[in-house]
Amino acid sequence: MKIVVLSGAGMSAESGIKTFRDHDGLWENHRIEDVATPQAWHKNPELVTQFYNQRRVQLADVLPNEGHYALKELEQKHEVVVITQNVDDLHERAGSSNIIHLHGELTKMRNNFNEVFHVGYKPVNYGEKCPKGLILRPHIVWFGEEVPLINKAAEITRTADLLIVIGTSLEVYPAAGLVNEVNKSTEIVLINPQKTNISTPYKNKFVQILGTSAKNLPSFVKNLI
Image (cartoon, rainbow, N blue to C red; front, side):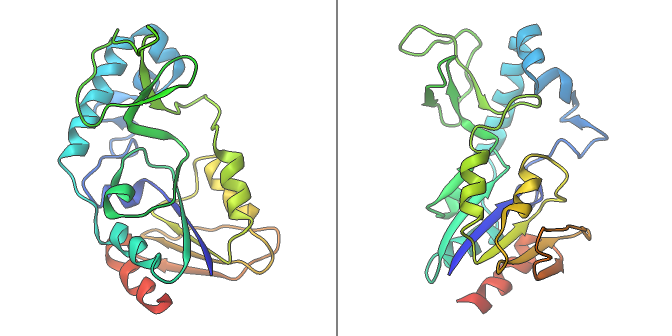
């Protein structure tokens, strides 16, 4: 069975990673407009660089949760593709092997030619350059930027026999629109603490599990393997 997973911020939050919705629109005491937009980068690149340095250091101190490990177990019996809105590497560290990061990756930087460089969890000073002499910026898709991998994600979603949506209220687009890409026979399972209303073109079979990925995903996966 081909299983596509769409994971959101709620899944990472269970490992202790803060989300930008935690503090009334503030992201670790910063306005989104000041640290997560192209305009912010042009206005104050030092602040933006410092902000992502702090998040990178924080990432080194957290661990995957049981939900992440459950997805790895799912690969024992099924073909699994994880499409994540999260920029952390918790899916990788749990052992999932096929991951698409829609919004970029915190452990990487890139230049203006979209050449990507792995930096791990270490801080990067603003002004550091790649081997070509170009200044590096966080490898993050900021608000207001196009999502380069959304078309690839949509193509993969169309091939799913089962779509599992985890830890997202499906409010952030274009990622939320992936539920509309499933085919007629695809079953959709949503695991989230809050009830979420969705509609698909074919009125697909839809199951809502009210709960968190760390607590509810392992038992769900056991039933599939």
